Length: 198
Length: 198
Image 1 (cartoon, rainbow over the protein chains, first blue to last red):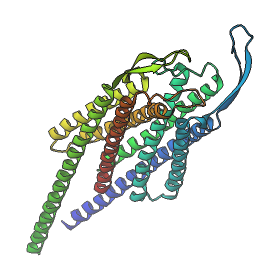
Image 2 (cartoon, helix red, strand yellow; image 1 turned 30 degrees about the horizontal axis):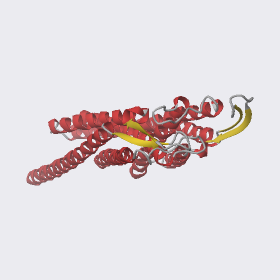
Image 3 (cartoon, chains in turn yellow, purple; image 1 turned 180 degrees about the vertical axis):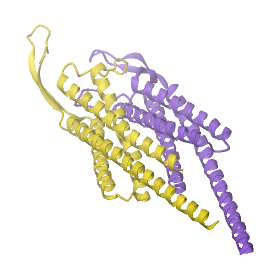
Image 4 (spheres, one colour; image 1 turned 135 degrees about the vertical axis):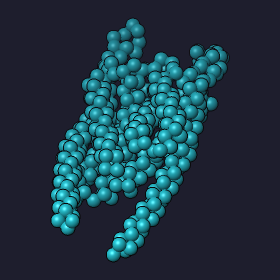
């Protein structure tokens, strides 16, 4: 009886240590995926911030003031911070970049996988998602108005003049939407992992 | 020895049943909070959808075509679906309403707390958050342009004419932002509960 008990105890210990090994390996794997995805999200968030943040264009446009006279060249310029929604987009992406950079440092420092830190990162990921996607909605609306205008309201399109400016803005919005999707994926993975551990 | 073993086994069973009771009570409490918050979110999402969905205004505006002549009365009208971003906002809030209504039914039917269903609801909550907040960003931009215009781009304000229409739009945007915040709170509570169970 005693020897059977000893065996079973050893068996449990062996099983326990194997489970711990698998859990540790899974956690390490999760953390590696997390770190890689965060690096990609950071690169996209920073790119989106910079690409729209520095976006500007100066153009000389011929304007016909009197129908019978030749057109007059007029210097027109545009900058992203002329439009409040573009400014919001840039600030939102800058904050998201700061959060992702900070979370990367915390994850790399938090090798033991402290639950509280992991949870706080996931909660701030949620805030970053809200910032990024509301920014995409806001800047996307300006982009759409720039390309199409709105004849009902009387807002004319401007992207036929500022082609480079608009192209850069649209690129930045797409890049930011990808960054937001990666942040969303990180939260989805965190939730999956929590449900699995439950 | 035997009686001590029996006592300890009974003690474990008692402790176990008490823990189970506490867990069941906590789960019931969580589900009650969840159901109440979802009802509130549903009410806000549906209200936001309807308030902007039916938003329209007809006005007679005096327009002076020639400086020396008296102004001519012109009939102008506006509807929310004239603006693509308002349409997106309405559709996004309608989808979020549908999701919240469906999730309520699933939670009420899922009394045993099936893990898979609970997780799927949380993941769709995330999608609803993205839809609602991108809609708030998009419609908020139109609202801001309506109230302030943008002199750099040459888009004039229109809310001095369509005051009722703009007021209704802003109310809808604020209501939707509250609905989005409640959905965010639901995901935060789900994550908290998962970390506690870990």
